[in-house]
Image 1 (tube, rainbow, N blue to C red):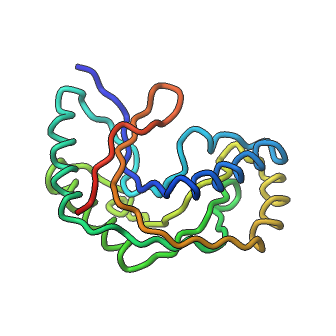
Image 2: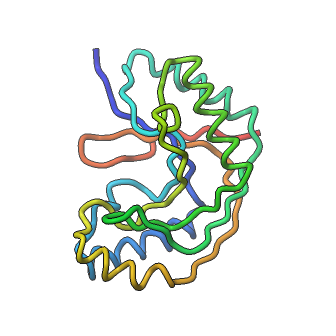
Length: 181
């Protein structure tokens, strides 16, 4: 039996990923925080879980069927936010479409596969695109947050697919994408 770690996310368009990666690079160079490079820029919809490779076709087929019943999701990124004292992120607004999508997928994965997400663990859905991670020291967090809490950033776009990411023992990478209707 071979098991892998996966998570499910929404990935912004390439030009937004490039901006997010430039910000990650800034954090690596000026604040010695590079762990955010361990995954492509994304909004986590379902947190990491372990999945048996033999059952992977079941998960893929299910995610494909789920995605085909979804409309593309409008996303608005507005400024920055933080999970004090170590994480800084690009702030996606909690739009009704994003909240409903996350709730629907979480409910579906729980009822079909018994997968439990953060909301089932009494942790509210907090959409974010991480640019500085837990390797950010508390003192560097204070320095960076003083700058980034005031920094302006605004993007509006639509995400046309759901992405399944896999951990390759070092970093997270795209495993498969599932297009919306």
